[in-house]
Every structure is written in C-alpha cells, then in structure tokens.
Length: 134
Image 1 (cartoon, helix red, strand yellow):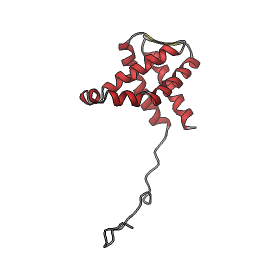
Image 2 (cartoon, helix red, strand yellow):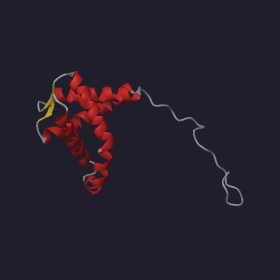
Image 3 (cartoon, helix red, strand yellow):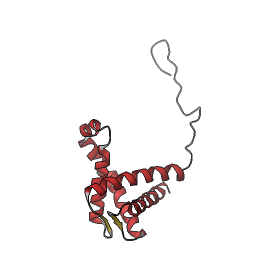
Image 4 (cartoon, one colour):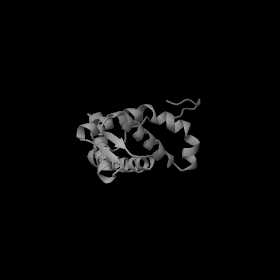
C-alpha cells in the first residue's frame, strides 16, 4: 500500500512539473505513471551509486549536486518512456527541483502524522559492577 501511495505521489509530481515547465512533456496520466515507475526504480538502483561516486562534489556544493543527479535520472527516464520528454539539461534540473518540492509536499500532506515515539521503544540497560551491561 505504501509503495502505491509513493508511486502515485511521484506521478502527481511529474504531472505538476509538466504543467509548470514547457520543456517537460507528458502525453497522458498513464505515461506519467510509467515514468514515475521507472524513475522510482532508477532512484532505488542508480541514485545511491551516483551519490557515492560524486560524494566529494556533493559535499563541496553542500548537497545541491543531488539535483544534478536527479536531473540525470529524469533525463534517463525520459529517454526510455515514450510520450515523456525532457528538452534539455537545464529543464531537467529545474524539473527535478519541482518534482522534489511537490513530492516532499504531497508526502507530508498525504502520509499523515508520524507515529509518536512511545516511552518503551528503547532498550534499557544497566551497567553492573563487573563492566557488563544487562
């Protein structure tokens, strides 16, 4: 259920980016759904590798390089999914920024409040005289 909700949120974010930017074209909702699915798979498989490979540059730019990584993944998805097109790299960077903002906003609104941490969610250990923890 959670995966379907995240997939739907990403689909809405892609549709929002296509409405805001002229350089991102989405043929219909079905195309946005498949683009979101591919973008989700790319985010799971390639994004961690790209972040690790570009870690010094990401640290140097205070994390802003992750938008470039997101733009690359967005352009990769547009190259595979028919009916989904991104005109250029600049459009992809701005589109990834819009998708990230809309995705964050919808996730906080639709996911609902987080479960508060209960008092007994931790393990309580006591140190004994012989330097053991029990």
